[in-house]
Image (tube, rainbow, N blue to C red; front, side):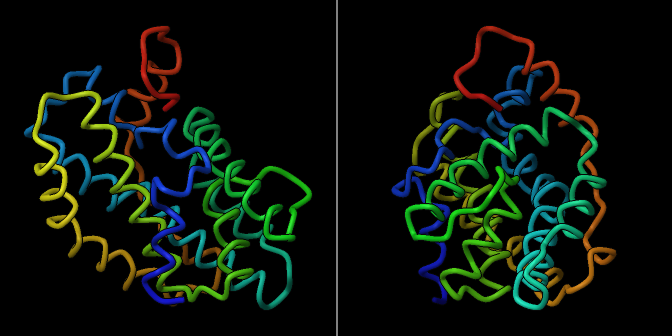
Length: 210
């Protein structure tokens, strides 16, 4: 399915991603400026996104080999200790679960985004490298789309951010595309981002769920 798999993470496929800012709104509420967004995006790719992409790739391997991605799910949960962050990923996964059901492959429970995407990749015969790229692309586009609503900027700025992030996306893809064991999933964390998301979850003035 090659690069066309990126459409799975595009806003033109409304599975709920439009409700998420990939942590940008909490960061902006904590004082992040528009000049700092590219750095924020790179930090996300190197931490939480690397964990999600690695978990998705390992889950895909397990679905193919055993039919059971549960070990990858447990490893992802261990690397995602924040209940707020996990809840946001489950909300995204719910949307991909609806898509799976429409494709005739319903899952018996709501799964977080990385595991739900692994099931979808298996159903659509998407390779592990493109699956990792989808996870990264989803994050980049979520941040860029949210920034247009949260900050005063030119839409061309966000295009530049996405292009500038492409080398880091490919580094993440290269690092995780060959993973097969849950113990190999990256364990990078972003404590400041988690704190911001916890504060955001308690506020009543927000545009995005997370």
